[in-house]
Length: 339
Image (cartoon, rainbow, N blue to C red; front, side, top):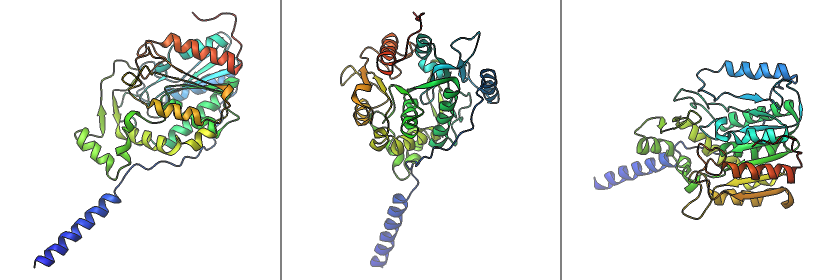
């Protein structure tokens, strides 16, 4: 009898161990960059196309919509260089404002401010079903819009937007003329998303840290950042970073790169993303040393370094980014500089 009970118990243990080992987990996603619909090339048609796409979205939070900022609003036209902005996770174009606008004004560039899938919306479950492939495809569409706006295209990315900018530069090296990366997400600080890659990791996080809810609730002091995020959004971040933010991707980047980040000392540094991972990425870029710059902003005191809503160093970030675009990329400033 005891032997039989032992065999049954052992069998249950084996079954449980197998169930745990093969349980659901986030898998690094193998991404493909598919062709995107070409946007209209005529300025008026392009403006109408962008406006119509945003008008079709339900429940956009105030000032979160994608939009074109023309270098000359009175006479919209193609410019020699365009800037496109890719915002971070849960954020919107306001995360980089007004620094992205100041840079566009400094060099007379048209500017496209994106709104990535699942972002900028009122619904708490807006990111339900989101995956990394959707984000990569959306960023490719942003790049195509950039080429409808200007001959050269500078891609600026904050946090997750920096991840997507690196992905674009690796996959479309001829289409990206320079990268400006503000606190790019290579890895989150302290590897916080690692449990999602464990068997049953998402389920464990949901019940151990989020009371069983699929929605992660947090406080937001601005409409530019979502307060409620579906767990699928975090799944997407884990899949994107583990699948694509790898040395093989960075080695394919050839464009000029500016890297800006917050670091003062071990106790005072970016609270959201890993500074060591950013610096390792920088060293692994295929970009020649003469065409890349990095700068820490010890007074930023925030992950979001370019917005005065969060950062104490937004003016310094603007100045360093401007100098890079002028001195390394070779953009010519227009006669009238922003303040």
